[in-house]
Image (cartoon, rainbow, N blue to C red; front, side):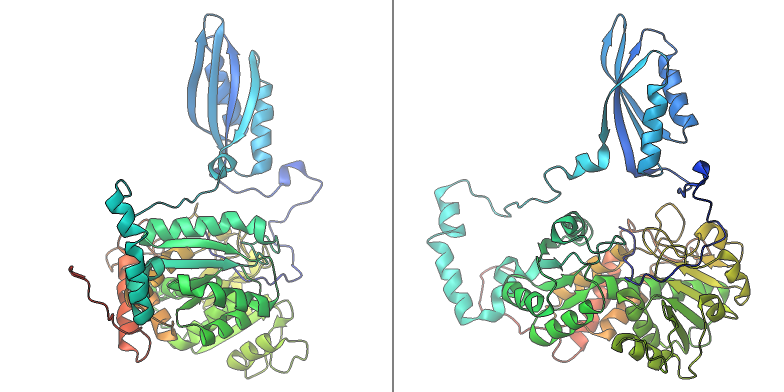
Length: 506
């Protein structure tokens, strides 16, 4: 999962690599194929031994990549085979199928989209952690034995985290109003993303998370719904809720609940961006308090990034959104954007994104696709750092950005330096749950960013490796330990110790 970004949708300036809509060869397409657009085509081929070669050649000439050819049935007059191949996008998949239909002696029988097949029936299930094979098992796990545990918890509610799933369970809550970079799709269409998030929690931190998709975008109703379900969870992960509504929801829930509330689109993105920036500045030998930073996008992610940058000691930050460079004297700004402007632009500088970038050391984009001509990067300072992170299409082409920047990172998995929220949120929640935290603070977010940055050792650090892989086994334990340590150090940030004696080692 790449970085989820802010909901800002500014009027875009066509970038230099925009192409004429009348040019069929000019359809924007990623430089490489992806498993997310992979298909399996079942086809029959005649008995010509060269048929398989022609099939692979057709896919290659269409720009695809054959990843497998499996024989389903062999007959004297030919073969039935499943050809699995990956494409750059959905339209490219159709082009490959058309190319296969044109191969002499080949008949396409069926086309299956592997991504949709993976989602059939959903991606989650519930499994029991205890055996239920005998009457004794049932009598302890359920009635009558469970009644003893219920009575004990009624007397010692602080032990609910220890004797129920609450201690290892997170609710992934959305209203479906800002799904990935796709916009307001509603709660049903958001469910596959929430399932995926829950699967990531389990894979990377062994946390049991559950998707909660609410059929309302009313702030009062969302807050009340989460309040009502909170007793069954050890933490709340807000996800894909549009700004500025997400700010109020998070603030009110933090004030009301005795468990941590974390908006991943804001704070997860901010943690990973800060960690990546710390290491990028090490590469270019610059210091955070000294550099000039431009952030494109004043939505959920942009606001949180700016806040954490300032907490970490950044001295010079400008924010750009659809109104231009955010200035405190601009009457068009919403209260949230005005607050950002007051924190970052006391000189009331005005202008557009290329103006803000003149002389800047760092660009961080969490706005919208192709809002920045690549030529504008030439006006940045020497040894510039560029993070175009809009999802799914960045603000500027990361490949072309390398002509003007010393370090480039993005949300894309097909390029070096992927800034991905999965580097943060599993470890953050693992640490919060382990420490029995009741809240999350800026100190914990900073600790997570420092720990994530430190996973990249000095002997590993270079312009193409400023952030570890999401599959690096050191990431989650490092982030979790740092967050837990910080939580235990902050007065009132953790729950009471248990009061029920259990005759086993805890």
